[in-house]
Each structure stands twice: as C-alpha cells, then as structure tokens.
Image (cartoon, rainbow, N blue to C red):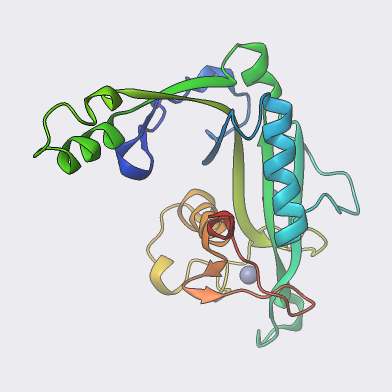
Length: 225
Ligand SMILES: [Zn+2]
Ligand SMILES: [Zn+2]
C-alpha cells in the first residue's frame, strides 16, 4: 500500500493527509481543498464554497446525461465540450473533452478528519527573517496555528462522457499519450490526472488556455486568489 503523498502548501505549510483506508475509490484523491474556518465554519460550508465557486466561475457542474458511477464519491461534476479534436483522420475518433471531478467529503467527516489545524511553520520562519534585526518582535508567531475544513477531489481530463470511445483515445493531441506525455506509463495516472489538475488549477491544458464552449475562459482555482 502506498503512503499518502506528503503535501506542501504555500510558504511551506505542511498538511498531514489522511490514510488511504479512509477512501474506497481506486485511486487516492489527487486534489485537497483546505478552507479556512474564517470562511467556512463547517465542512458542508467549505464544500458549498468551493464546488459553488467552480460551478459559477468555471462551469464545472453535474450535468451528466446518464448514470455516472460514483466510485464512492459523494458528488461529481464536469465541464464538457472542451477542445474538440476535429482533425482526427477517422471521424469516429473525433471527440470533445470533459474535465471530470469526483468530490469526497462524507467519509472524512464520519472519521473526524474534516477539520485540521495546520501549524504555519513557514509563516513563522518568514516572520523571524523579517524581524531578525528586532529581537522579540514576531516571536509570538512561532508555530502559528490555523484551522481548516477540508475535503478531497479526484480530477481528470478525458474523452467526453457521451462519446463511444470514452474515456480514452490514445493518439489524441489533447488527452492522449502524446507530446510531453508520450512516455507516460499509465494513461490515467500519467496523462488524464495531471491534465485534469492543470486545467482545474490553472485553466490550461498542456500550457494552452482552455475556453468553455461559449468562448468564456476557464479561470482555474488560481482565480480564487
Ligand atoms: Zn471521468
Ligand atoms: Zn482527447
């Protein structure tokens, strides 16, 4: 069994992620949302804040036209109709793409893992540097602690759900094992997952900005800053 990844946040924040056994899905969640308790006093409020923002600002919504296996998730959503690949020689391989995310929160709450207190060691160190010429000042920030409500997601980029070839087309220049991803061992973990993270976080695929079908850009979570 693989250990959960040790995640580092901005300014060296350290996040102790829950063990693999908390999750039933086949792969460990690849994105974690930590929302300050100052913004969200409960996990439900954190889920509404983030998923609502992604719905309203990025168009990531539950609009699946058919049953979609939850894979132990508590809800899921997508942004469809992206980057249509119209140049495929075989018309049957032409397809648009989904950014698909599954959200996980109930098991975390049931296991008492939805609230975390993070020691902001990075901030304390920065404060010490700022105040190194003024002994005493800033010392009170050593190990400052902040409380967060958290939940997880599993995000990937793939052939649209409605297409007969969903989820994989190996030679697609957008979602396939091509370009910088030509050497990926696993098409899901090595291509679809990192592309999904890139789009969710930065609004790009392979460095190129992605537009929604109506032409609006996908801002990505960096838009929250
Ligand atoms: Zn999917
Ligand atoms: Zn594709």
